[in-house]
Length: 220
Ligand SMILES: *Cc1c(COP(=O)(O)O)cnc(C)c1O
Image (cartoon, rainbow, N blue to C red; front, side):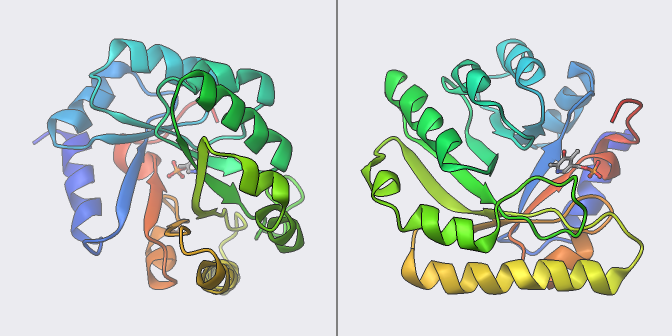
C-alpha cells in the first residue's frame, strides 16, 4: 500500500465514527489528492482560493471542498459556486458577502465561525463576545443563503499539551452553551496533525489533517 492511503487508514483507525476527517491538501499535487480519493477520501481542505478553485476544476466533482484558511471578502465569489464548507468566518461582514454570493449562485453555503482560542496574536478568529453579538443580530437572522453550522478553532502552536487541551476545552464548552440556544450548531472543527488526539478527547467532531496524511509541506 502506498504512503498516503496508509497514513489515511492509520488516522481513520483512531477516529470515532462520528468524527469527520478533512484531508488538508494545500500545496499538494493532484496525484496526492487522487491517491487519497482512491482510498475513499472525499472531503478535502484548502487554504487558498486560487489553488482550491483550480483543483476543483480538474478533480472529480464528488469531492467536498472545504475552505479552511482566512478568506478575503473580494475572493468569496470564486468559491461560492462549489465550496461545501467555509471554516474560518471571522466577521459579520464576511458572512454577508458569503450570503450575497450564495444567493447569486442559488445556493445555501454552510459556514463555521472561527473563534479565537489561542494566545498567539497571529491567529485569526472572533472573541466570544463577538460571536454572541453576531448570532443574536437581526442582520444575521435576515440572511437566508448561509447556514452557520458550528465553530472552528486553532490551538496555540506549543508543546504544552495542557495548554492545547485547555484551549480546546474552552471552545467545546462554549459550543455546548451556544448550541442550546442555536440548535443548528452541530460542527466543532478543531484538531490538526499535531494535536488531533487531544482535540478528539476534548470533543471535536471535525479534524483538519494535512501533514500526517500527505507528509510535510515545503511552503507554509
Ligand atoms: C494547514 C492547516 C491545517 C493542517 O495542518 P497540519 O498540521 O498539516 O495537519 C489545519 N487547519 C488549518 C486552518 C490549516 O491552515
